[in-house]
Length: 144
Image 1 (cartoon, rainbow, N blue to C red):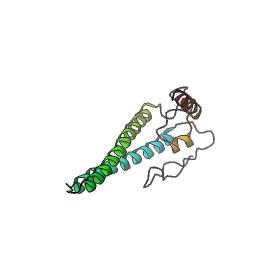
Image 2: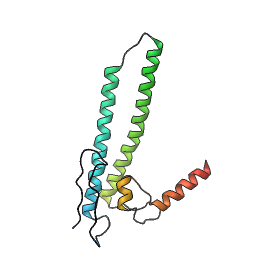
Image 3: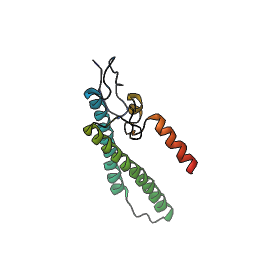
Image 4: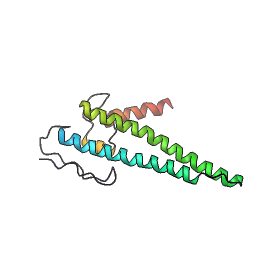
């Protein structure tokens, strides 16, 4: 029997999944493990969105000094860019959760082989195996 999904506080603070010998890849226990990681990660990101909205509402001020105003606008701009990246990440998390539901999670979308438990624990939204990801990055680098 495998030891699985004891997920706690942070999305990356969890007990690594230890498959039993001969255990089938992406069985129900493994899928529950990754579902818990993804849902926890998404919840943490959503809390960050709420904090940003509250922070921007609470700290928005019309500073008379142009330097103070510019500093505040710069801080808000950086925060909004961060939240935009997190918004895209939330979409990837939602996509991964849909793949869990459909039974496609954990398999490379390019070649169809197993992505691997450790790689998915490192990057739960991974859609490519390490070989296909490496080739993808080489192509990207060559294209500029």
